[in-house]
Structure formats: structure tokens, C-alpha cells
Length: 299
Image (cartoon, rainbow, N blue to C red):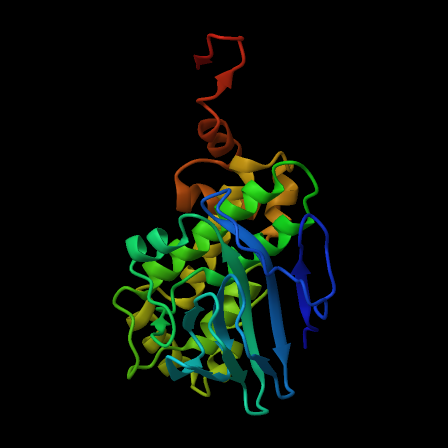
């Protein structure tokens, strides 16, 4: 079970969660500003009350469990697969009623928050967005958490870009999603988090209390592909990003994406992407800017 993980900063400094000044900063200096983010995964009751509300927006993505939220504008139940956004200066009370709860949060502000939410069609609380199972929200948050570890002058701008990816993911994954059908949220969230580990399909079926045949049938109906194919797609998506944006050796890319056998990884990548890993890296970097003073040239 994960511990509480908080990644906080205020005026350029990391603070304890108990600090009364944490991340309560309004700013219009940039379009999107990330103040802090957190991961909560606990079997114990989790309750959070703010009688005055924060000065920034709070996005909550529930992975597992149920949160009961109350505000002056209304009450709502936030369940696994739901995203809720609380606006600034809104008093709220959040309670998981003592059951196991697993959720992610990010607090943000900026000059374009309102226009972005309107443009993407993302409602604020008490309206709730329900995401379809085939979303990458956990991966987006993972990259956001990793972004806080960077300590250079680009970190805040990087976090802003990662936040926008989270908002876009929330908007895209909510289109066509709905409740009342079998969603397989638990097992799909498990895959999204551990796609680079060995995941036996019988284990996924057991998570949903189904037999293998029933699970495979429902999974393909919902996702359009088999569980094995879905895992491969996630691994290839991660591999392409690592090949394009890092200089990791291909052997390390393979291991990071869950492949101990380099030859098998290369063969799988070629079958799925149409290029070898090295060929994809070369192709993705085909166009680059050469710094020639006032006259940059595109290769």
C-alpha cells in the first residue's frame, strides 16, 4: 500500500502539507500554473475539510473507492474513474467513509484556466466527469510527479504543459463515457499502473471476480482489443516517448517498458509501429533546428 505522497512548492520552496501557506497563490503571470500534486492510497478513512476554500483550482481523479464531497453549491459522490474539479474560494468537505481509497490530485491556477475548462468542456463541481476505462490519466500524473523532481529553470513550464495534458486527457476520456455498463475499472487501472510489469491475464480476471472467458469477452467489448494487446499498446506508447524524448540506450528502453529480451522487444516494436526502435528514434528526430544565430535552418 502506498503512503501519502505530496509534491508541494510555494514561492519556489517545498513545504510540509501542514504549512498554512501551502500553494494558496493566485497568479496571472502564466496561462497555467501547477501549485502542487498528491497521491493518496490508504485503507483508512480520509477526510479533508477546508472551511474557506483554496485560492486555486483542485482536480481530483479517483482510481478506486468512493469520495463523498460537499460544497455550498451542491453535493456529489466521486467514484472510481471520475474526475471532479473544485473552483477557487469554495468551502468543501471530502470524506471516504473509512473504506480503501486511492485518488490523485493536482492544484493549479493561471490566467487561462477558465477559458481552458470551457474550451475542453470540463465542468466544475458539483458536476462530475466520468472517464472511459481506456484513459491514461495515471500515466499523465506519473509524469507530473516526475516533473517536480526536475530542478532547472524549465521545471515550472514543464509542469504547466503536463497539467494541460491532464486536462486534455480528462476531456478526451470523458467523451462517450457513462455508467450503467461493465467498465472493468479496477483491472484497467491496474494495467495502466503496472503495464511494464508481468501481468497474468488470470490475475486481471480475478480482480474483477470473473472467469477468464467472461473477462476477455467484456474487455474486448469495452476496449476493442484483448487485454494482451492493450498491454502491448501501452508499452509501445511508452517506448515511443522514451525513444523520441530521451537518450536512453534501446536496451534500457526495453527494460523500462517491461521487456527483458531486447530481440523480442525490437521484434514486437517493429510489428506494432512499423519501424525498428532505432529507426523510430532516427525518424522522430529527422527534423531539428540548427542554431545558426539569426538564421535557423530546418533539416
